[in-house]
Length: 413
Image 1: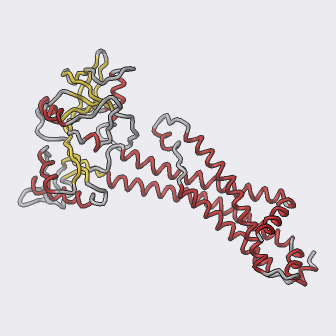
Image 2: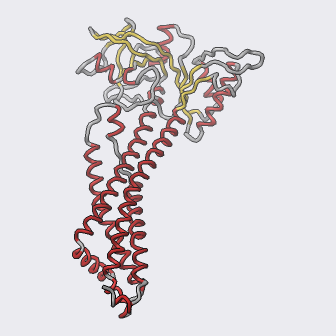
Image 3: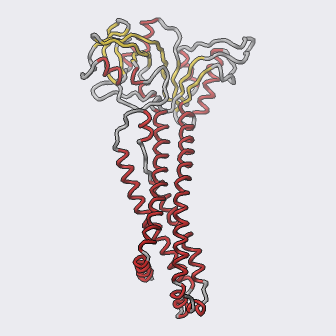
């Protein structure tokens, strides 16, 4: 049966070359449109999440706020200050916390030879590198426990400021002056993509041990606290417990969300994912409408084919062909046209995505635009859509063709 269907389909293509070519082109164009739009939407979604997580891997950055509610006789409007010791209370009281680090911070003058620049410097724990995805370039390292314990004057530099201070050379092992105090560079950050930031991007940052920062500047209060839950699923509970634990210690209502300003990168990444999915759905609908119009074209072609082959269909029915044979023939031809056009559009889309992906992103905007991603889900979804369109485009003309009266069809001109 398949040989017969293929032979009839090939014969019809030869007789209707122009019509078939236009139909296949319409399907190919619709497939190309929907695939490029879905790939761009997927790439945009992933880039948004990657940019957010570039500032930290599923962490909370906690900053002191101002109470908006009275508590145990204390008035509202009190400014809170956070301490490094708050981290010990958090870790002891909330077992679901994985990593922590304080953040002492200030703007400083950094110099190397004749090169001088101002940047934001933070005093942190060794876990800060993992929390903020500040991974060292090969040959260097991040801060370690001995640096913290011995108050060493060592510094980890963002990649941009490192290139500015030491153009064309490896900074590791060299000396920089921070507010006129010599520090040894122990590592530089790997280049990363970051859209969410505080006090500037990480590639412009200088990182030193928290103990060294305290010794240099005598800071009592931290700029903020970094906390990472053990899992994303536990993040809402950990966030609630942070308010409760710090509320008891600093005497504020645990329901007072203004008492602490929490930069929730867990929730922010989820919001970015939902926004990206919404954009992808919108682009998919637009591309799908283009493909739907092409499907209507296939249906029209099959209606024309059914009318032109009325005598042939009547003859087949007269000599014993069943209705389902006629229906199968038309559905097969419609699906074949859809899949041939889809294969051409699919191949063109893959080629375009491959070419676009090879274009270097010169700035932040291009990082978003030149990042289409063709996932397995997109490919399977497009194939399934083409199959459905082919079946629907063929089934109605097929039913009409199979319902003709054999005697009347033989008199059809």
